[in-house]
Length: 303
Length: 43
Image 1: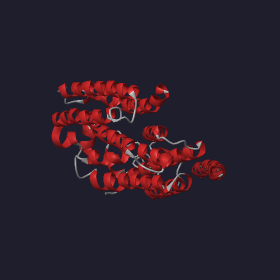
Image 2: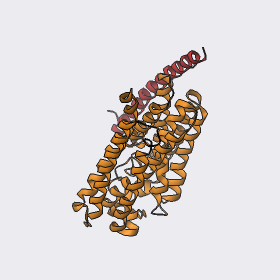
Image 3: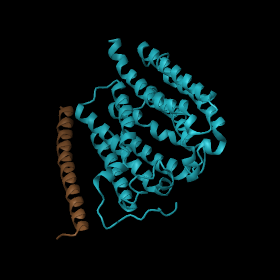
Image 4: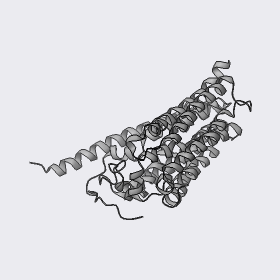
């Protein structure tokens, strides 16, 4: 880790908006949604107050992990156009405040989860925060192009935590939901990293397009889409979800695969010619929302 | 005439104090609601 280029005006107290920005609120929406779906798909009725608190804890835990990620990566963020405007590289916040905020938020979210829901959910939440910060951010990201493959596990925990908060245990369905997000993460991030490749290259982050080139990345996107689709549809043949979910997951996955094949066929080297990659990135976000939404709606339709 | 920098510090301190007060109030309400919910589940 090197010194942050921008010198923050530490005499000024941090603006609350900058502290909020540290939590990456837009990323949090997907985390909250998948956690909520994991909770709603669980075969247990949750008291609304406790359910709300569990989701709040997951959101706060995700915010804490994001803040600690920004604390550690401030030097990298300063080198990339996409992230240079964040509070730390822009010099609007000092690093110590970000560290204290992230650690405090992490402890608070885990303790509240343990007290309001159960300690299994709290333990998984703690593991997910530690995994994101220690394994992905500190260990893998700057060392290997497999960073987001393994690091993707951190983002796959929310539905498992939601399920555990509702039931107190973890069964096959939440494990499949974990697997789905785990396999979804590489195509999602590699599509993005293809059209922001120069940013990652400038910052020296060994993302797959930087290390192995666009062609290999496009092949990997297509390859990962196949097991991802299998994980998405699996709850149906295994009897864990109904036909509505199965058909919806299959249709959504087929469209994902079609977009991945368009990416595979694309030969563009510059971001201007990477419309298929941009489409796949945008669709991948919709895909996850839609698949998880279908899982929740499925029992209501069957009833 | 007040220093604009001093004004900015006061403005930020005030905004953070208001946010902190609101968050603490919300937390107190949440803890109360959790307690009631847990008591209801025990019964």
